[in-house]
Length: 102
Image 1 (tube, rainbow, N blue to C red):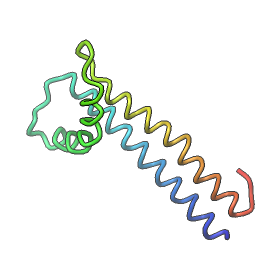
Image 2 (image 1 turned 60 degrees about the horizontal axis):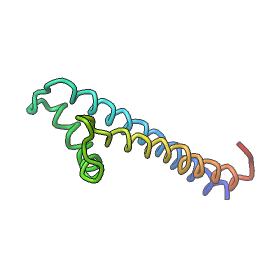
Image 3 (image 1 turned 45 degrees about the vertical axis):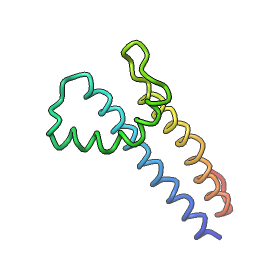
Image 4 (image 1 turned 135 degrees about the vertical axis):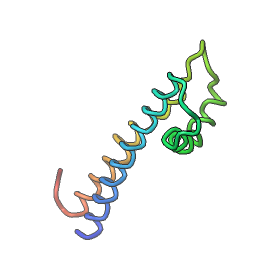
């Protein structure tokens, strides 16, 4: 059972890293909208392609209030929830399958 436990721990840790990186991509994308970025810049294009599939459905449902776009905040809250609930549950399950405690 320790192999399955190690698998859950590894998946939880990798998911935590990926969610952390994506959270920073969302933050950088939100910050870069405050300036007038060059739309042909490869970094700006990457940020747009990486974040718009997640942000645009939320933006359509929430709308923009007073010139403020709250969709990055909603996505960041979702990422924080996933890191605290899903990732920690996976890691804890992995440790329990190994027969140990955190």
